[in-house]
Length: 303
Ligand SMILES: [Mg+2]
Image (cartoon, rainbow, N blue to C red):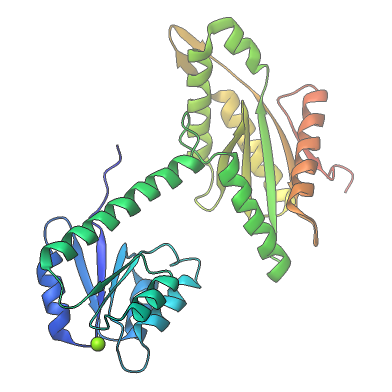
């Protein structure tokens, strides 16, 4: 299991005395506590550093806790941070309003210290579990790289960006050649080792901003942000030579594999599925023309 850093709890209250009390009962070896004395200061804090849970006062000058909660829930970056109201406003209507705004819990004063601590701990545990599940849902378990679902989420975002501000991107699809022979001839353990080594090689070889994912089986895909077709093809050629030069040690074998590549750049107004299809068609051509090669759509050779 992966090690986590200490979770951070943000306490928001215009009365420093209240912050002191809550911090005193929460801060320990397991929890890091930070604070803000106004609604705006709280919003600034979450912009600047990761926060795992917020204890939020309701009555504050300028911007009250309800408004802070509203704004957090309207922002996709902060929507998932659990918010617990801690307040003297103990009417049923207030509690209902707070929860309807998306708060996960509502604690009224006077509160019992041990109960606050336990509730905070419970919500932190749930958040950690949720984050673990989210990570598992987007990770390919064999290679540790993003899976198809993760890739599709990102290509959708990249396509939206290209529509909004013209930011372009190029896709590389790559498929290992004759991979079935490896699995059939040497067994799936050997095939798995090859997939892991090649994925690792590509991830290290690519730029930090490039997104490398397993698309399925022995097929991988790379999203190259702010990259044109020509540069994308150069990068594909580098991967082609790099993969070809790898010696994969599995059991007593030293395997050499090759891969075929299809490259396509998104066109203005094009959908993400269309550019995916074009990259896939280029990959198909690379297979047809003898494998272990890079093809693009459109084919650049005549340009
Ligand atoms: Mg207050």
